[in-house]
Image (cartoon, rainbow, N blue to C red; front, side, top):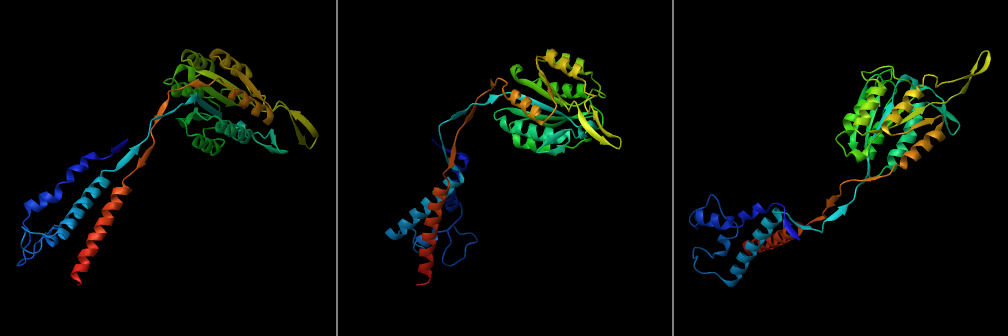
Length: 329
């Protein structure tokens, strides 16, 4: 169907007639301060009672040009049939630890040692790209928890802000409980079937105002499902002056608390000791059953104003050319 975006502009159609009636016509003896285009030239001098057929044609052309110009200003557009855009997925909040312990280089990619945050960025970035149809938000936490990105369908922005995060940006310590609390706050207004928080950390709760277990209990009451990921290798070989020795870089990881958080909220606890396990965890998270969300209607719109505007310009050019030709005869 055809509609006008600004239909009220059609009230301008009789404007030339009103001006012609209100403002007196200029005579040959005086120069008018304001002249209405075209009208005087087609009147054949001071005799307004007579006009030639040729003059009548140009008066009608001028009137049609004005109508086309007003119609173009009203922005006619073609509205197509409404199309349903089904949006399926869920609301996912990603909470990523930025404490100092994430600097530990115990992950390998292509034989190169990288720190935990770099590994998280790479794998979580791929995970975000695959979650088409989901609303995704990003929480960064250390000594405090911060909302970096609210729930959005703009996955590219979420991924970009994740890549721009840096260790120590949120403080040196780890506030797991605060991160869960912030996730609950951002998810509690969403449909209960969709509320999912994925929390990744490599340590224990050492800061914040909310204890992790208490935050988990609140999450369970708000029907927020929490999946926890403990990241970090169990054992690496460190070279020293006295030879090689084996160390556990994940000795501070509080797996007991992370498991309890997942169990209380109906989620699962995952352990990522290397890059392959981390990728496997996110592949498992991809298998979360999608929930149908509200459908959105999209109606294609095609602008039609260039057509009447083109006709108006064409007729105006024709009339102007004829008038100029008359004057130079």
